[in-house]
Each structure stands twice: as structure tokens, then as C-alpha cells.
Amino acid sequence: MWEFRSMMFWRAVFAEFFGTMFFVFFGMGAALRWTTGPYHVFHTALCFGFAAATLIQSIGHISGGHINPAVTFAYLVGSQMSVFRAFFYICAQCLGAMAGAAALYGVTPNNMRGTMALNTLQPGMSLGMATTVEVFLTMQLVVCVFAVTDERRNGRLGSAALSIGFSVTMGHLMGMYYTGAGMNPARSFAPAVITRNFINHWVYWVGPMIGAAMGAIFYDFFLFPRMRGFSERLATLKGSRPPEAENQQETRGEPIELKTQTL
Amino acid sequence: MWEFRSMSFWRAVFAEFYGTMFFVFFGLGAALRWTTGPHNVLQVAFCFGLAAATFIQSIGHISGGHINPAVTFAYLIGSQMSLFRAFFYICAQCLGALAGAAVLYGVTPTNMRGNLALNTLQPGISMGMATTIEIFLTLQLVVCVFAVTDERRNGRLGSAALSIGFSVLVGHLLGMYYTGAGMNPARSFAPAVLYRNFINHWVYWVGPMIGAAMGALLYDFMLFPRVRGLSERLAVLKGNKPTEPEAQQETRGEPIELKTQAL
Image 1: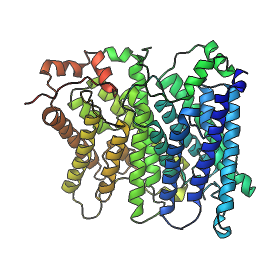
Image 2: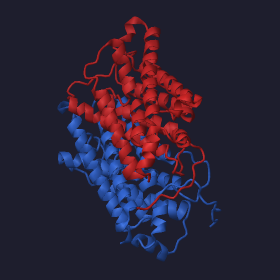
Image 3: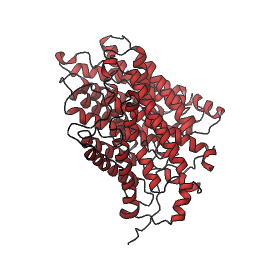
Image 4: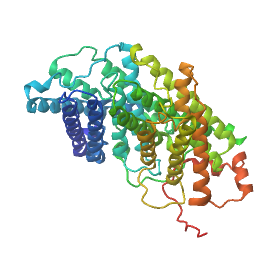
């Protein structure tokens, strides 16, 4: 486990902790019931989206800016990071989410805490419906993440972080009416732990993880195939290739001009 | 038909299917009558706009990211893609829209489906008025698309996908009060098929297609003329030039510095 001894690795893990902590703090903070009425969804969606954009911009060059266990899982499925690194990222994200939620709990007046923006299924939603919505929400996010971080692209990308942030906003604008728009298991996990309410909580892990895997496979094998052999993929998962593992994590500013291979 | 045998062609077609499917799923999902009142327009407009931005960002480098039959038609009018490709793109977009609407129908509680955000003329709007609105909505979108994907430009464009997304957003902010803001025939087509309600449906095809044609002609022949002979244009339409159609589809990052010809 060469990564264990690398300070850069631990800085990346801590960056994920920091990113997820602040994402949950601000996102859930805006999602509390400060007002009732129609603007709530729009307000919350913008806050989550811009929080994602801001924090991905802040830590993207350090850890890849996942701040979402589902995105980390997608990178794992796409063989773009090692199992070891993925495990630590997911732990850091869950702990960061809990830290953010705890801090928010501490600074919010008693009468405003409510359910701490706990994600629940809306009336009329069955478990199957909810899981499907979560799959769609996360799949579009993952495909967008993979597309904007693809180092083979050389187009007018603009800001990768902002694109991902808007993808999160869009998911919330629709998803909040169905499932509260989980998309991010760490975000759903934090208030569930604090309020000790795990009713239907599995939907917010299973849906996003399935969506993430589908997105990763869809992009990497079908939409814009990445030609890598099995042994190469296995080596990345084991963490045997230090330079590639590091490079894959960061969004690059000067992508290499690569011609897409015509199959 | 050389394109038929190219895997990248079929990946592009499927990318259009995927992009339109998710665009309709998220856009219509937010457009359902979850709340009433003026704020609904703002929220729906943002969702459609950001959905367009996200999916164009996700598939733009694969298929050109049209996700709209009118935009595909505009590229056809501008002789920037072959008839064969345009036909398959439009079929994929219509099927993708149907798939997205069908999934949305399946995951939405019965009492919330309404008419699945079917586009209808608002009270007091005649067919002539509505068609004119649709023309304007689509004309501005097409000119924006052509401008941001023009490989002759070399300025600080920022994100092409985000620019197009905001163009869609602007169209919805105004158009929803008049016609529900079609702009995209596939988006209007999907709920019409599901509910078998085609009253005034032709407005949502004729308006956008006329607007697209006008936009293409305006940009390619007047605003920023692309000087190409008839034989060259004909060759592209027939699909005789394999390299150019492929290259035209993708947004480029390093456009050639060309001096605008003074007419």
C-alpha cells in the first residue's frame, strides 16, 4: 500500500472531509424550514448546486472533488482510482457529512431544527419509484462528472466545477419533489444519524450507487470508450500505478490532444 | 452510406437518445404541477435550462449535443451534417423523449401526473401568435448554438454548454407564459403521445423548425457568413466527406484563427 505513506494522499482524504462537511453544512442549512411555501425548493436547489460548485472548485485539484460517495464509487467502477483510496474517501465523506450536520445542529435554534432536512419519500412514492428516481438523479450527475473531467477532451468546457454544480441544482429542482433529491449518500446519511431515523434509508444508498455504476459503465464503455486492458484496470484498483492514480484524480488545465479511437 | 458502418456514428445517435431522454425526464419532472403560482415558471425554466446545459456538457463531445430536433434541422439547413445523420438524430431524439416521459410517468404518483406538462397554448393566444413565439424562441437558441460551436471563433467563449443552457432558460422564462415554451419538438411530442392529445400540436413542430431554419440561414449567410460552394454543401448533405461531419459535431477547443471576411 504505497498510498498510505504519501502525504498527498492524506491531504486528499482530508480535502474530501472538508468538502463534504461544508457541502452538508450549507446545503442542509438552506434546506431547513426557514420559510414555508413554493420558493423552498428553488432556494434549496440553488444552494446545494452552488455549494457543490464552490467546494469542487476549492478541492478539485487536490482530491478530485468528489464530495459524494456515489461519485467515488463511480470512479472505482470506472477503474480510475484504487480500492484503498475509494474506501478512505467514502469514510472521510461520511464523517465530514456528520461533522457538518452536527455543526449545523449546534448553531441552529431549537425550534428551527425540525428533521434537519432529513430525506424522506414524498407521499405517493413507492420504494421502487424512489429508487428509480435516485438512479436517474445520480446517473446524470456521474455522466456529467466523467464528461467534464475527461482528460481526452479538448473542447470549450468552461468551468468543470460549475457544470457539476448546475447538474446538482438541476437534480434537486426535480428530485426534491420525489425523494428530497438524495443523489449523495453522505448527505442523506448525516441527518439520518443525527435524528436516528433510518426509515427507507437504504433507498438513498442503493439508488445512488446503482446510478453511479450505470453512469460510469455507460460513459467509459459505451459513450466515450476508454481503451484499457483488464490488467491495467486491475493495477489501478490495486494502487500499483502511483503516477496514473494521482493524475486521474485531478482535473487538468492543459489536456493532451488525443484523437478518439474509432472502433 | 459510409456513416452506417462507423461505431462513433451509432454512439452519437445513442448519445442523442440518452441526452434527450434525461432532458425530458428532468424538465417535465420539474414542470409538473407540484405548486401553483408565478414562481413555478422560474423554477421550471431553471430546470430546463440547467438540464440542457448538463446534457450538452455530457454528450457534446460525442454527438454535438443537440438534444433537440430543431437544432438538428438547423445544422442540416446549414449543411453541417448529412441527411442520413440528421434523420437518425431526430428519430433518436423523439424516441428518447418518449422514453424519458414514460419513465417519468412510471415514477410519479398518480395524483401528480396531471397532463405530464403537456404544452398547450395559453388563453388568448391564437395559432399565429403561438407560431410566431415559437419561431422567436427557437431562432435565438439556434443562433446561440451556431455561435458557440463556430470553430472559426477564438475568443473567450467560456462554456458552450452553459451558454446554450442559459439560452434555453431565457426562452422558458418568456415562452412559458405564451405557449409553454416548446422550443424543442421532441419535448412537446413526448407528453402529446403519452396522452394522445395532439390539439394544436403542429405549432410545436412548425414554429421551431421555421425558427431553426431562419436561425441557421441568418447566422451562416448574414451574421458570420460561411463561404462554401453549392457542390461542397451538397457533398456534406450526402455524407460524402467523412472527416468534416465528424469534426463539425464536436465543439473544438483550439479553433483556427481566421480573419472575418469583410463583405
